[in-house]
Image (tube, rainbow, N blue to C red):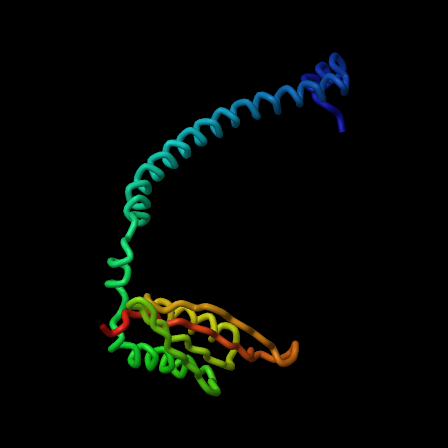
Length: 174
């Protein structure tokens, strides 16, 4: 295959090293043009980030506003709702088809607050347990998950034996 004359002359005049240098020069020009675009995009994104941070500051300040102990205590459910809250927790585990052996609970009160510690041994697959924990915490804002112990009987088993320790927090009866 013959090369056209307009290709032969530059190749002959520059040689292969010259052509490689010319290609590098063209690539450098392309990189400069692209970097200018990228810099413009970066400036635009930084401006958007500053705007979002400015919007988020008031919300974060409101969320982190100090709450007095009395306000926090007043927001807790009364002791009269304790049995219903416990029943809701147990019902939720049943609705999600988690098999439970026996549930133990102990009540303690101190300085106008009560805490019912609930120990729930359950068996189910990992996804069921995650759904249960998420649903329980979403359902009762005064519920906390204190400990989780997971054990798989064998590496091939799909079910997991779990022991969940919850605390139902509330206001003690006066």
